[in-house]
Image (tube, rainbow, N blue to C red; front, side, top):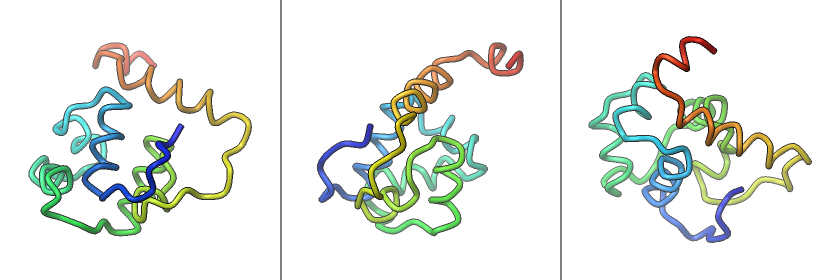
Length: 103
């Protein structure tokens, strides 16, 4: 479930995503094939925009709408299975490396 505050900065949105998924910046970076320093720039507010391809990758990997990642605007109301998707993403974020390999 996305937060209600559409006025958040990109830094707020990325930090919310990390917190929601239980990820460290380095884990997030590795999962997307970007540098940990780039994630630091995003979460610190030093980078205020994100490319559409990266936002789409975040959507694909974490299920968080690319439009919201880039702009803070919520897309049209999510499908009925959004709660299940969010729960699955949270659970995957808590898996150990060994458990992830098994899956």
